Length: 247
Image (cartoon, rainbow, N blue to C red):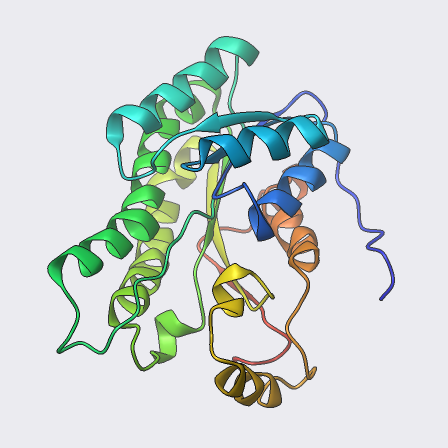
């Protein structure tokens, strides 16, 4: 596979990426660093996120996106250290799969609180800083499952569908302040995909027109565009980056 050649200039900007200890989040961290941004990788796995951040030259911060206090601390630290916040990528997520009649309250709440709650908390915490500067970019990560459902993933599907509604609503609310809010719907070979049984994974891959799952780094071009100055007239959109799966 050829290496990506698409570039954007984020020199001087400050960027937060959540769920960034591995997979898509880590690759986005690399991308923003290469593009010149002060990049903060956020993950609840403190040891791993700090190790990965050190490897690539970013700042690793341990935080649970389900905690308002911890989210606020991250945003405040970024603004305190850099004097600004330009981009938030809400990528953090977990799986707690089960058919609905066996799903516990705890598994329902954990997934909703991480995916949807984390997206809400980081967007809310960033908004005063965006408004004060008249500029900001939010890129959320949703899923094909949020529109089409998937057996055993009622909690995940509900969370991802919620992110779509949240993206469109906040795009309308924040547009007048120079803030855009968009989302991608990826289909990459992350740890979540690897947790799917091989037979089911092969079945999904067979339904992808391009015929394979993406590498996590293949998400960087789409996120980079939506987070860029050049995308200032794009807001409230959900961009499928899924090899044609959603057609």
